[in-house]
Figure 1 (cartoon, rainbow, N blue to C red):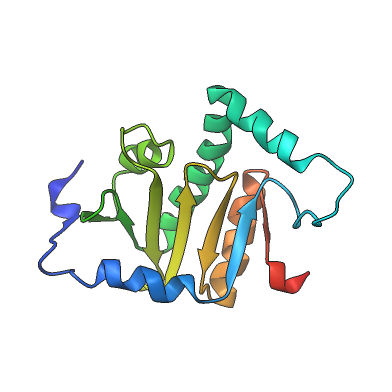
Figure 2 (cartoon, rainbow, N blue to C red; figure 1 turned 135 degrees about the vertical axis):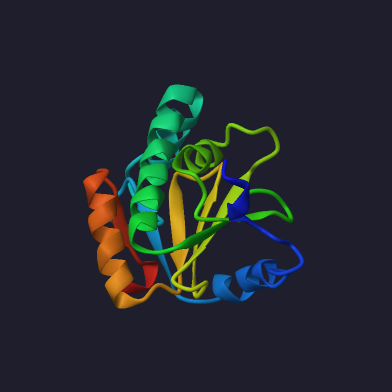
Length: 161
């Protein structure tokens, strides 16, 4: 990893403070499903979700798709990635970001990515089968839809259903 890309904690103290307000903004879901599953669906959503967690290979395959979406997004916009409780990295090396998203390092349970001049937030938790994007502009949402589609993923909003 190129050390010059590490964000100095003293200079960028406010990055952690950006997360909570963005979590209150409208959001979109990057998912393997094209829309939200209805609450009383006759299907077996939870069984399918469990299927992905029963095998590390299936889980990593899904998370690799999320990683490639983030990497492709980083071709268009700068990103800041929180890689530990207090450490941020700006425009990390692709291999480093990919490793973080696959949760290969012990103790990493969530990946937070600030983008669009730190006005938008992408979050991936290691127990989820989707990724959430908050406060995204319309033009970046269109780009995100294209990037997700290139990986066989969908972008939807619960408020739009």
